[in-house]
Length: 278
Image 1 (cartoon, helix red, strand yellow):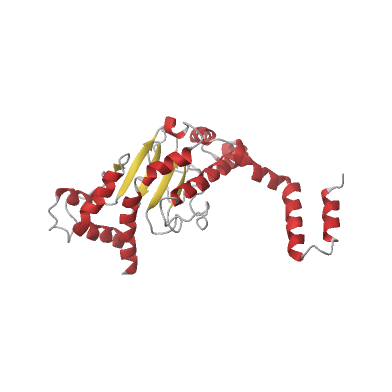
Image 2 (cartoon, rainbow, N blue to C red):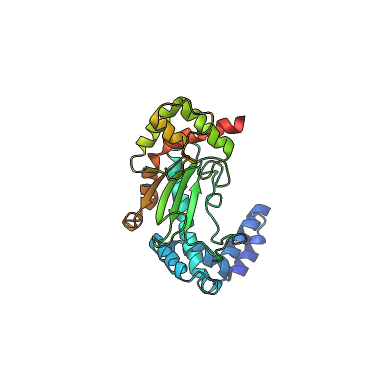
């Protein structure tokens, strides 16, 4: 049987092969003969979401460079599987949110590095104890509200206590939160309706002002007042282990829940657009 090199040589000598074809053949043989490339292109199918969850359980107890280096290949396999899940979820969300285009929004624009920025932190553990992705218009660095999937062992006291779905804007800029409050002051009923539609989600209302923000003292509706006092507008859903590992259709089940929040997200992003246009 001829070797890969021999096959490539014969093909490149054929007059009918154009320059593009030569590059394609060379790339194909490189991908299939380079052991590092082969390793990275096949690992995704070997892991499950449970494996990812268990990896972070172990990482929580061994959050140091020596342990992580020894288990780096396992992490890369988990990362590949999570990226597959991320791509599936982007596709599912794109079915109900017209601003999420699976053909344009990439997994890289929605996922995060595992390495922590410890420059200004008292906690010097080098790695995050969770894994997550933020699916939103323009990617995670953009200004818009979106859909955040967060998976971590429940014992970890981190951003959330356990695995969560989070929808909204985290620490919005002053002009954005002002725009949201302006809209609430004249159209708060629309936001309240959108929150009620998200029947499986809870409004985060722990971080609030004691008094109405300046300029909104004339709002008399008690429900609107409660929303105006919030420092950020967001919804959350706690994911149990039973929910996460029920079957291999997690992306579809997550998307069904997130669909409940589409009008909430639309309200917030309408206000973002108002703020950006000023």
